[in-house]
Image 1 (spheres, one colour):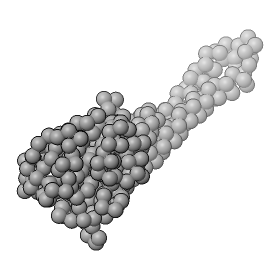
Image 2: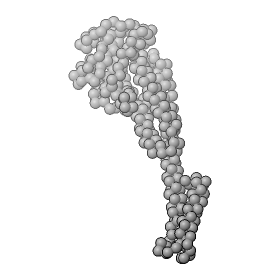
Image 3: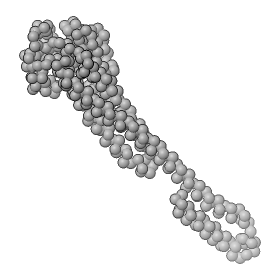
Image 4: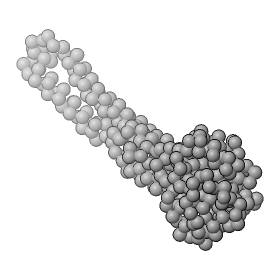
Length: 322
């Protein structure tokens, strides 16, 4: 579906134009066309391929989606894929995608499986004509910057969730639940990492060394995007290590709790074993217990069992087994 199609000249908006009039603006000095689509159909992609002479492989990737974040060059056209990561109301991560075609006089963005639009990016670019004058390369930077900036709140949310889990690591009985939450957090962290790490490697192609011609005027801005990605990636690495450590600590807590249970069971078994031993020696079929005819044998036996069990209970309690 077409969201908007606008022609710009020297950093200023000329007009909103239909797709069939794009050809009249291509090739004019200082002019480029910015087309934005959402969940584009085959007919729309075919029309754009015809107008902008897009490469078949790039169009095929945009049509099918589910691509790894990347930046590729096809003759004079640059093709970029970025993941759009969104936090759902259930704290699950939904991954969409935006494919961007960039040429000297055009830029086409195709957004798939995402509710987050880029109208704010267009408004920002139009407020900065001195930068928009750099052409389609600056628009690519603005789109990448918006995508990367949306990663920061997600990383912050993951950090907060990890801190919450760490606060209850040493609560008795919480270890198993903590491990489940940590594995869920690790899975979401991996989703973000799959969006960030490949894009960081791809962005490195847009500054320093041989830079695609369309990106040369905005090279410094792409370096800023790369710095942001590097910072996010470092944070993700730190979170990954912390999660691994937290899982090991929780596994240790499970072992300690199991050991405590074993100690309590062993202590009670010892106490009842003493009582069972006394009863087993004296039996239950005598007229008076113990020593057969002793009148006070039965209450004495019961008292002795209670005293011995009480002493054992205090010793186990003092040792921390009960």
